[in-house]
Image (tube, rainbow, N blue to C red; front, side, top):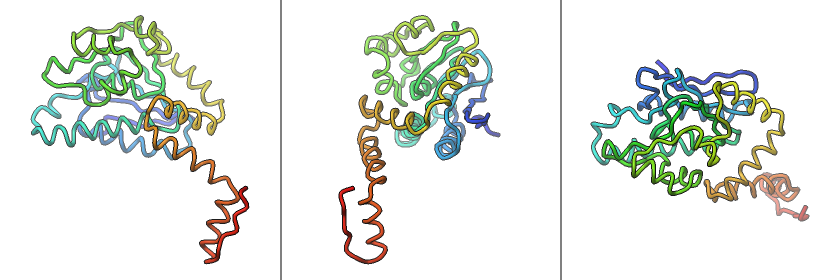
Length: 254
């Protein structure tokens, strides 16, 4: 049974975590389902993405300890951590704008998932935390890297080294969330509705440019932008045509 659903509503794709009895904590199957859905969303006709969860107790409390607690060190590092990192990177690098709807606890991998989205909306009673040290592990899906680009180093240390939980009000004050709302889903939907009225290509390229500026997959972003520019030239058409015709190309510089 799927515990990560892909739901389409017009131009909006929703990725919904559905493991409420475990406070939406990630299992191996959930990671794989999320990866599959992200590949579909990247190529479908949706123009924006919402990441949501079932219930209001937790957006996501991270990774289900039963999913990784028995893994050998090599398996834990090579598969659990690296697979999760790769999948969250895929979310961060979607060409479409993404928004996370945070209700309840947003801990560990759940906070790292939220950090992989472009913006976040948070319920007033929701809390952020990095509790990994309390069970003898470290953040593994972006909590010390991507999150430190979005929150200041002292705030990340406050959570990761001192076990402090950050309130919605404070998260908004430091710019990590776009809004705090008693109905975060409706607030997120309003932001999404605005996003889908904008030029999809302009949004995609602007997102790539911003990511290049902050170091989010900078190399690939620079080469993708350069490739998009060259693909529109006469020289590219001439080069491809000459190759197919088995002749010497006559480049015009246009």
